[in-house]
Image (cartoon, rainbow, N blue to C red):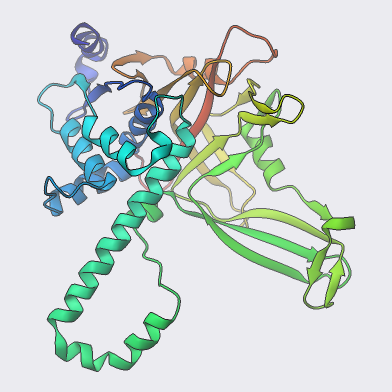
Length: 368
């Protein structure tokens, strides 16, 4: 990578961003699914900054091996390198990942989206456990306060556990609302649910905007699918739709490129051309005010099938686009992003397709 690294430094020249580091990640036998997601997260600047803060404020001891500690350690290693470019081996992180989840233990081709989901939820679990432990410690260290809060405490423990709003939630969590309208009495029942990413069904020659429209399209519940209306106290025909109630700061969109084909009895990769814009307007929200987003990372699946292939990532950093392929990092032109939309024909030699898209919300401090 020495040559490639210096090539990248030459390409950026005086424009090399102050204090930024561009490091490839070593592949430990099919760990490209992990490397591509880690690069996208590293260039999600609010997330990176909070992780570096976490590392600085928590003296992480060697034996305290959880994924959060390993990730914070890895990001700190990258950001504190003396060189501007190079390669780092995320060995400790990968070892911990395999130890913690048998799904990622084999040398089989893994799913980058499953990994992203698992990682964010693991970080949340760790942060919640640590907050809980700190709270208990605080309570045991101040007995006077404890007796004063006694009766309330007992009630709180018996009730549902209060969810901690971690920095993962602040960055990635959005809220969906599932609205069902009874066609007999017109009563609307709304149920909220949180999400860290949106998984969208895709169609040939479509766009993210049309996939989002389909996601929020009205569905009629009838025949065996009738809805039990509490007001009518019976099963009724109804209309159901999903809307985005609270758009997240970082919008992660997962394109469902792997589809189970009943006749084949296996999954097939959909190489459909799905256009993802550099700037996205999210219009299917409850408030009807458009939320504007800017694309800053794409995890790309390379290959014709779901059980083999490779992952790479495209990342926007300080207005430059970079291409990360394990150990290799190079600059690419912004116009090259569109070569990852997919193929307009079913059988095409191009097998590099956008799979996970990372958008940052505009209007509240830009990341890049």
